[in-house]
Length: 286
Image (cartoon, rainbow, N blue to C red; front, side):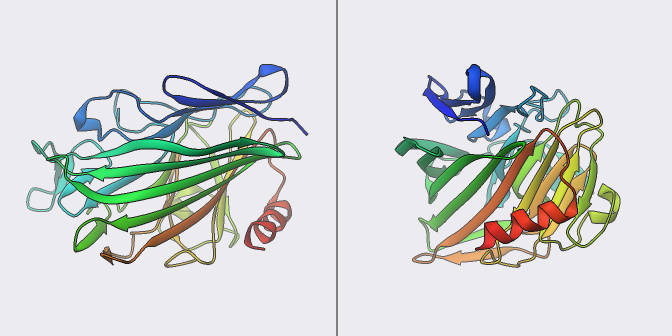
């Protein structure tokens, strides 16, 4: 299995496989248009053999930035990016002065041992740059047979009397999202419940969802049993994979409370099959 290394840079940090092959770049503090709701993200992400997994700021959705947390409705702010869905017109429309930011504050811990571990603090800012919430994320990336396993954990605490999180009123997306690019643009999805194809998995509950690239490579995302609304509903399209925490409705967090979320994410050169994913899931939960 590959030994991983980490190097800091002006954007954040980058992680490499053996022989300096790139795994990913974490963009913690990139300057982007306010209408994209700037947010930290991983892009690009590569399999060990060099297959590109992600698509970063595609022309049709410049606010899609690889692997990221996007929150469409955070009180009155858009922390996802792009236009809002307007129920009255049943259209997506740009709304002036409506976009917030997930602002990177600091890396509080960075270590490299059997894997790479990073802790980060963030502030959620509304349209007036008033703090809506504070967040602490912990990323751990480790080598496994055929690729890497990522553990992504976050704690979100309101800075106001209440924080109401909501999904897009049409597509119902919000939360942890992966925008996939070539050769994953026509990915083949399957889930823990035996469903096959992104159409069959969309809005359905599952413990994990995997997606194979058309010419190689495989990724998977897993929902931890301690997460709210587990097993989560999923947002899946041919080039998208996301844990749809808010599909069933808004989630309200009062001041003094904390929203804890934990996910696993895998980047492999080949699809190991459902039994292997189930074994990975059991390890993730233990």
